[in-house]
Image 1: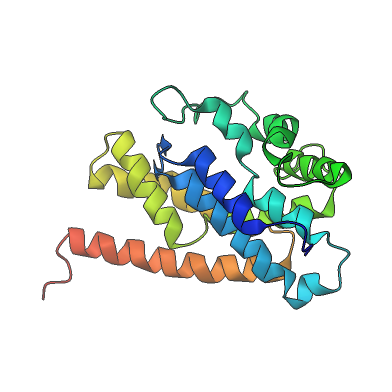
Image 2 (image 1 turned 180 degrees about the horizontal axis):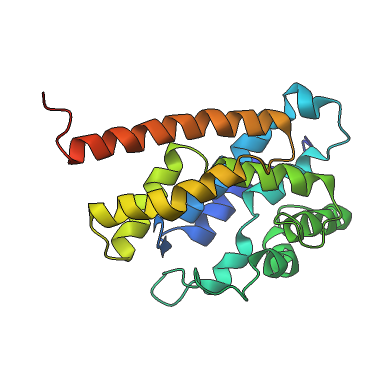
Length: 219
């Protein structure tokens, strides 16, 4: 990583952008999610499957932190992020266009900013031109493969005004099948293995939660 880039300052900038933002998946979820994806990518850079790849670490890490910056355009005056049902809104494309506005003070290399923009634009598979986009794509998905997904599920369940029965039904009929199908879609074997391990823990936790809610553990 470049010594000229102060990552503490970048994280503070990102924090100011999403501080206090609420959404269907929880209070300041987007803030925490971006930092987690950043940390995943830091770990990945030290692992064998990326060590020998031609990865621009600065571009990867900055893009990882700000990969969802396009979603800021969906935050209303009440600091609530709307648009979960808006399939036409492409936050990756928006992010590619606006990221330079957030980085100018912190990243002095214009070519690096352009690369970061392209990485963000491709992190969901659209306009893929940069290898680093695949890493963030997997890191983003990994964050929703384990117990963190249950936190999202509970928060989203509250928004939908579902009771616990409704939440378990949604998980059984839709949430779990989607999560299972995504386990085969990782671009890097190692990240896919991590996701499978996390999903097993999540699946077991949801089953135990269901048992307790039914009082079936009382014998």
